[in-house]
Image 1 (cartoon, rainbow, N blue to C red):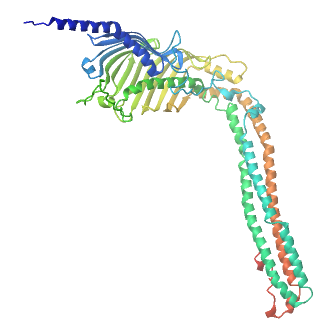
Image 2: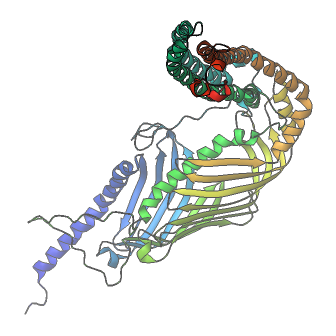
Image 3: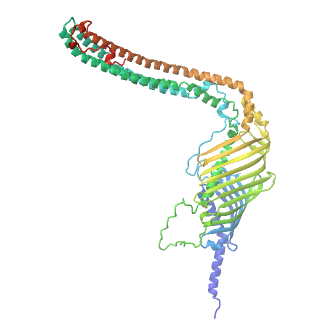
Length: 607
């Protein structure tokens, strides 16, 4: 009886040697190639790995010198990692789950220069959709004042700026001209002189019928008088209505001119704010210096955040369900049965981290990093901390990525005490040679879209590096003031989405600069503003006077309506007199008296 089947043992040995040989000679290379090629395509930037090592016996793996290039700057690596080592749970791998109980990540470095350009997977300076970002304006001077320190004269300013007064005057002029055209047409068509002439002729005809004391002629004229009275009364009513309409249009024209009264002053205030250094002095100087740098760091943070977030979102209510794969006969298919105890597909229970920052190694750890926190029930938490060091007295950074609820709630907190500042650049030629800073910040990100938070920094013991200023007295005062400043506080607040956020920078440095500038340039500032104001009022004076002339034409139309009213009223009087000459009415018996009005008031005339 044979206890061993040597043939089977030989087959098993051959298979083991083949698998061992494949793992030893090919698997590591395949993993390295997959990381570099597929990972680069997924992140749209070059990924490089020096080496990959795996061990089936110890169920462990590791890699060395991982580098992820910055797609917007191909001469910079966004992240570099010296080494990664971890072991996996072989039992979980059978069900296609990767569970890492312990991991070690050493020498994490951010924003490191490369020796040669990285491979471009998309044009640098464009996002994943290929759209170029908005170009940031560069500072026009070392302090970022821009146009408020312009040396332009008022005449040059008015050549390059549009005065809102002139634009409003042109618009008002067009409207008033339209009103003038309207009334010229109305007076010509609705109250033509021919109507007056026709009624005048009828009145003359009435006179001929009442010559002498012919009672029969007078009786006939009375019948014609009624029609003449109705014509005159109708025209008087028409004039009355036109006068009401004219009053409304005149009021509108007067309102247009009244609204323009204060516009030259508003133009002056607007241009003064833009081109003159007002009494607030260096308003927003720190925002001008640090704003572009801070925006650059915020944009970089969003890139890192966008790289990590997708790996945490399995199980999110907002993520569409995976489509069911169609079964194809003859091809294998992985059947995933319902789990009695749900478990994420990817999990790092604990990782030891080492961050290289400010030429200092800061130890940290990562706990509970999973791709399905809704199932796992725990948020991912990363923490870096360090006690007193050459660069600071203490360092604490905590990041929490929480997807355990339907709406994600992430947070980042930083607290650094007595951070040593050494040759810190902030603008073209400006910076901090030495000093210390206490920094405290807290940020929250809701639903992976909206970030809000604040950074507070107290800086002291400063020696500021300020470039020498020539020719511009204001810049020289600012430079001298900054050079003599040894401490100030700063607060940076951020609120909004990745595409659209508000950034405000507040500091008592503004007050320090304002006081110095106010004393140095008060006289020059007043002369400039006086000259600017004079130029604006001179440029707008003639157009505004032209509007007043147009208003005078509108008032002439009102006078013409008054003349028309008087003319028709006179005709009414003449008509009465033509039918009832003096003394005739008194000769008639009372029953035969003619129905001639007793006066203009009895006619109900409007004027």
